[in-house]
View 1: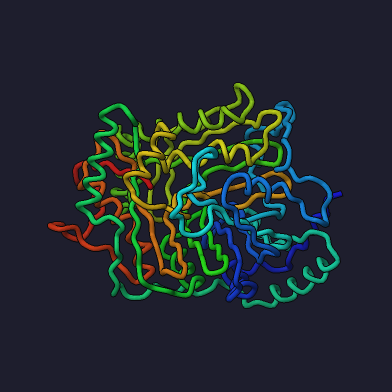
View 2: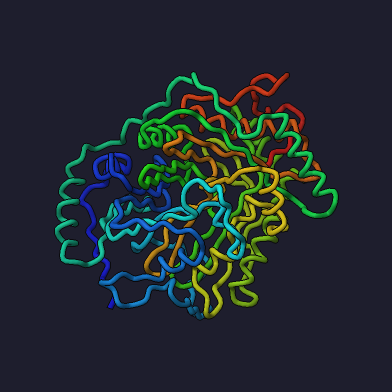
Length: 483
């Protein structure tokens, strides 16, 4: 039989940042899946792994997730299929969010790619990294409770007791958020702005030939800096709070993310959900400006068209692994508001077909259409030729794979990657036939700005351009693509 999941509620609810500092500061490998400071919904998880698995391709990823370990003779859900009876599923208004019952936490780099595509030879780092997790701390932000989770083992009861004593004695209140250093450094873009503008024109030419409908072009900004990863993440979550944030450190590589986008969630009973974002506006200076920006985003023909293209792409991807007729779009082109931005979000849902599991759904949808464009296969090859280098962890996904077959993965956007070479930040946008190069160039700068500021850096100024400005409600409507 698989080991029992032990749970120990804490008598108090310490702040996640305080808990993480107490348990994981200085650890070689650690994770924190973070719903953000002051979260009132969702769940956060943090802890230390018992093992680290590095994967080069999809076959190795499947092998890791199918291995229950020598102490567990029962196969795990990712080893076989999730069989779902649609009649037995809970009602649509029930809580159908996945939960982490321990298992694996990690990231899949963008270049893990299409399951049948060759790996690039110049990928820096691993195509996928998974941390095996047998113990964790769960924060339920809906109820305000904190629970310790552990797989039953000879050491589990002792770990629960020791950890509860440690966490219940922590200081009350929230941790003070550090601020990033003064911006004294200049980031180096992989492609300078004239070159990037030329790449945008090349994308438009590809679209004009009918070889693509949309191409999600990206750039990378490098900074020669080696900051403390946890302090940098705490500064990032304060500057750019998000409901799908995360901190993962593995050896010498750290992912610090303020991602707003859910790539894919699968419940243990086989419900699948994806929430792609296409369309972003900044928050307004006041309520009137804010409301105007919401209306502008909701009415933007360009943003709506981009979002619809990605919705169709995700529907097609999910139809390969979901029961016939189960794929639906319960919310389309909905504006969601967050502390810094308004975003145009759609929700696509389905029910896994008999013989399919959550990892099959990930493989069917990866890489995310919101990071490639459409059609996906030709977009991936076109972008690889144009961008001239791997995206790495950026544009991939991160999150958890639970032992009960559930999973929840976020997009690696609005993120910083730290390694022995320094820091990198990716940013870009969806290119369509209507895209203007000068606006798309500016968009990458605006999106990278808060991330670079946390590192004490700024992107170089385009020749003949002043500092970037966000659109004002009183200005003529301006189209923005999300990435």
